[in-house]
Image (cartoon, rainbow over all chains, first blue to last red; front, side, top):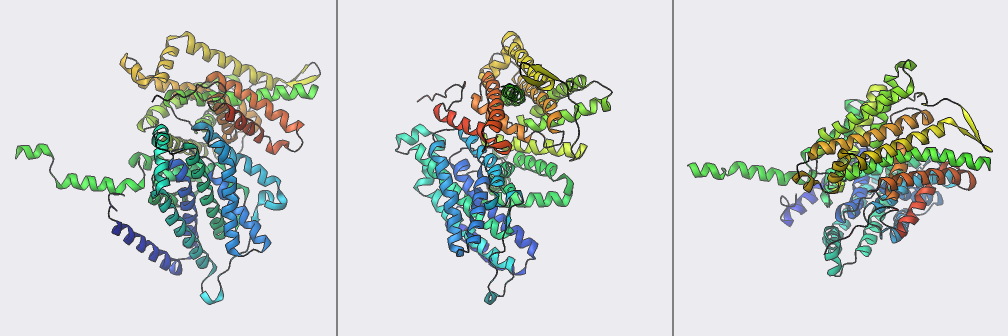
Length: 329
Length: 294
């Protein structure tokens, strides 16, 4: 994709087209489609966050779903207290980010599988905790809210209004994420991933890079949790399930490692494939999802984001006869 | 006191099941460098095969379990040959996605073949209890622990007393050099996966009588096994087994004696304990420290 979108202008045109589409589609789409689009935005933002840790810094994280759940529960709390929406949003990000930071401070010392284990423990521990504190979380049945209706002047249905808000947050976070990874810090993360010794020789502290990446990742997940509650209007402990974290990692790799655009593709994959699998045979969703996952990984090991580059290589090969043929003529 | 002994032995039995699956994870990790999230699902598949082999109780359950172990070897070797070797699993993220996909595929196949219903699975051991001092211990717990100990000893003998074991260790240590001295690395990797799947199958037939048989039966066990494998250091088979036992016993004791934890949160205890251990020893209990060459 980088080659394909080499010039900044193509990038911005693609971005503008996307924004216009986001502006128009919700008005004409049926509520079901709007709902799926909202879920794609939620998944894309959590995958982008996950990418900081697992893509850019190359550290397997298996707990992203826990932070999405924390963000959603924080939003529920805000709604129950009757806070203004902006405050609820900030609280979702802050709650998830704070817990992320507290987890990261000791954990970032571990590398490799120790880190993976601690992140794995988060959803495993968070679900029984959420079940336990019923007064706050509503236990296993979860909490539902009736929140953020479309104002009368907009003449929009609730699902349209909510999708616009979700899309706005998603765009803001994607711009934020893009600036983050393109700036000094994104480069530092990749340096730490490629060689921590070189990184430290260049004055980049691997520990601090990991703490920051993980905290950023949980802030993004918290925002995704807020968006999730807005789209779905309820949250249960199951939102945090360990399997969701695994699926997020799967979608991340399918979309494209260490790529902002790839995170968007990953979000589409995360939401669309279960829908497609359900269309084929609703009782065999797991089997079909697994099959699609492995076939796509086999065809494009570097993710959907690498397809344009592969195509352009193919096209160039077709246009130019191979050296041997030229030798004959 | 009686309750304490009972809890320790029950925890030891559960820990043995975790140890078995953890050992499977370590074997795969050593041979192909990946964490196999599908290891539990593969164990579920072979447990269904055992149920099929028992033919409604006509065949004694230990024989059926043996069929599951054999089937496990075939399944493991086949998945390595048919799927895993076609991907660059030395990359951690690719490996993760491959094993997640396998996990879903195998779970999906079980669901398609046998449905997502909960089934009874006969225990390998008589449903009796033995008095040990002041405690009353179930034969099932003692048998589970004994079987796993025997298997671990057999495996240790295989790895350190046979030529096959020597070549398996050589491939785990250094695949390139093994290839250069003429070993059939591809086949040895298949054997490594097969042996791992045998251990997974063992965990499956041992846990099924306790939690009933259904496609997601092993998901919870997998979390414990992952924890045990990482606590043990991921490269150390003995470490994984000891860590499995520690987790089983700590969990059983904490669930009863620490009031606030109870049965739902007891899974948190070993995880937090591991966290503390890893902060002191990032390489795990018996793992080797990774040394970087500058």
